[in-house]
Length: 340
Image (cartoon, rainbow, N blue to C red; front, side, top):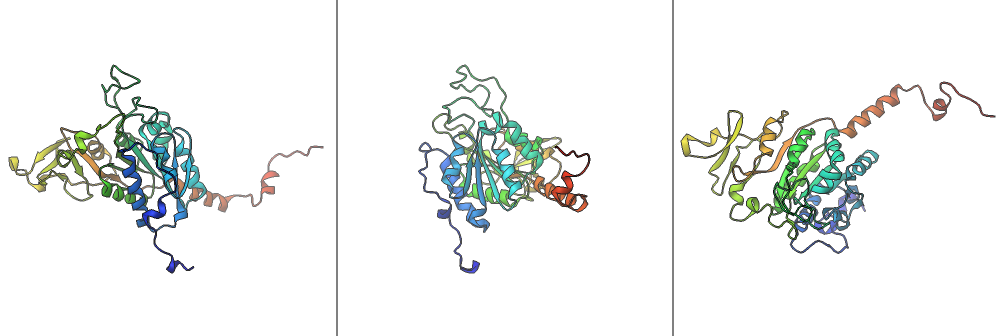
């Protein structure tokens, strides 16, 4: 069959025959569906997709995608994803992880995958709790939250995944809630089209152990005022009537209402996802409700040499300059001994 007669892929082509075993009402269902709808838009061969996961509720994801997949061990998925990408650069490698898997036991793997800028997509399901092991606090749990592992309330300060990624030198960072399927599809496509390590943080609801943890941001009655959807090159406008915005007041961001105190849309901060300096991206990533709307969409997207590209260039240069043409040349170089 010629390539011209091959039927385009659909979301059904990415749905496996496995029974989906998440709790009814879990946000993971929306994420899975959004991924299955997004991938056909990339026009890639189905055999070029690979999903790699660690441990946790989110990490069942590879079973439900009808693609190549690997369910690895706790926190170590970035290492497996890096190896897969280096071994076969044509693969579109997606790493699925949770806030516990990525930021606790997998913390070092997570930051170094971003630092190296290996060309993989990290999809971080952040529900601010350990769901699979029944409700212990995670590295992103809010200070004071009471859990089974700390019934008196935790005293830790939580990680902000996007801030951690910025500190690690990530070249692509996005955030989206599980209540926005079209937004998820858009950032998945943007992540894959980016060359380098992509982090997509999904604000995901755990209906059993941390229900409505993002309710003050994603609730129907507040979402217009508590979310701002970023677009590169566009003013940072939000609100149900698009009458609110963000300005830079000195060295700090400020939420304002258009029309008040002489503020016009021209005064608003224009989002520049391609800015090399991380200062504004760090402030945008750190906006929290209720003082600010939470930034959704692509926060940062800059170009840089990827780890896999660097390895390829290094290998090509070594092949050109090496004095060894065969393995025998290598074995017989330097001091050698003949064993009798």
